[in-house]
Image 1 (cartoon, rainbow, N blue to C red):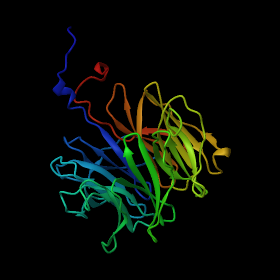
Image 2: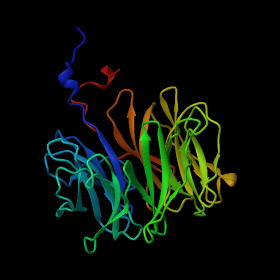
Image 3: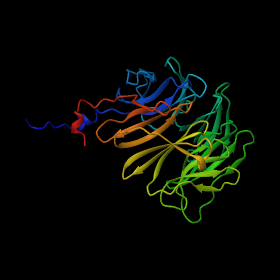
Image 4: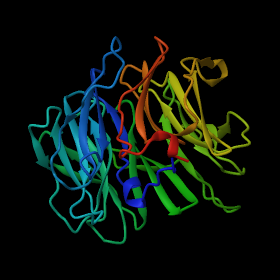
Length: 354
């Protein structure tokens, strides 16, 4: 029989799932999928005793693209970023975990709002927007209890809020000066003091990414290519701003994720186009790090690493060579791997994928 041929339009029906976020109790996982034709927020329960995909629950019905969904650390509420008509001018919303309440926090459709992080107590969020001047992004903080908004950092540049410090007092900000050069800034939410953590680079550009607090709270684990060819794991001392590389790499490390308590660290390295996952126990610091078991995964590309609040599970998006992008979960303690979602292949046999 002649081999079946599939048109480009058929391949456009292949769906994808991405953007995982754990609920505060670790019992639910939210994610984005375009199963309806446009990315919406869905949710699925997590049960280690039945680690097989079950039909998820749809939480948003906007018929408009949702860009991100992130659970509060303390409540069954998600912070949603979404645009209107594909204009990429994302607004901020809150969504209850059962999908019953969807509330707009911003309604200035000509402004871009980019979510940063939830405060550890879940009462505040930080975000960036270009409301002061369309050319620049400043950093703001909003109280979810009374709606009060404060500007934390004003600067004529591209400034993006990333993470709150574990005590909620500081916000880590990335300032992009080009697509290959950025700087890290620590902003005190109480005093407004902005402290530069990375130096001016007169000798050339440098990138700093995925910064997370260490277990002793004295430093930041991050990826950087300052003074070298490849993005590599480093530790930045918060008191001296001295940065020390922890490994020598011959490939780019593309993703870094650290648990909320700073005790476990996940790395993804691009080795000849394929992702290699490594996990470490760094509860006593990198010098005493201990390698943790990792799952046997299909060859592909990993992204969007997310630890559960208790640090026992790691969710990630896996895009393999002959399958649709989906969310997988690795239970570090039980050493169990399961596929949390299963995206449609558009009726195309998997063996025909290249």
